Image 1: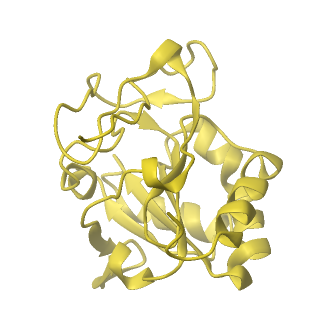
Image 2 (image 1 turned 180 degrees about the horizontal axis):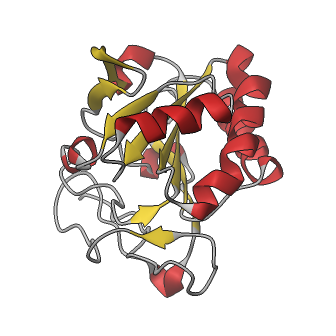
Length: 201
């Protein structure tokens, strides 16, 4: 029997936590690996033990900085992956970007990869400028239409920006953050997941 993992419906920008921006209709999945339904509007959800985590499907798209190149979650086989959905238009994204880069630099030697997903930025050059200006060293998929997220079969909270998802080495969901993050919030979670043996059940 498939376990239902809880996560989130859309939060409105400037409402409740004041640290996320809704970008579309409320998304409550009804099929796939797991369903996203927010109990009490939680913005930080942790999945433990590993056997209860959902596994994301195929995720790929154009490299924001190099449109001739494709980035894919599958490129990071065996690595912990931190997905961050962002837009340069999103104030919380602008606030957290330095913290995300800090955690990436601190954990990449532990077998951790960050992968951004840039959404709703129809002017690619503005998103590229954001990356350069903020000295972001990890790659991002350029996805103004949010197609890469929809390819996951509605298993993903596509209506909240920023969203950060921590995947273990088998790319199972370990944690979901539907709010702006500080390094002190994210780093302990990433380090804990990176310390777990691959194939832990």
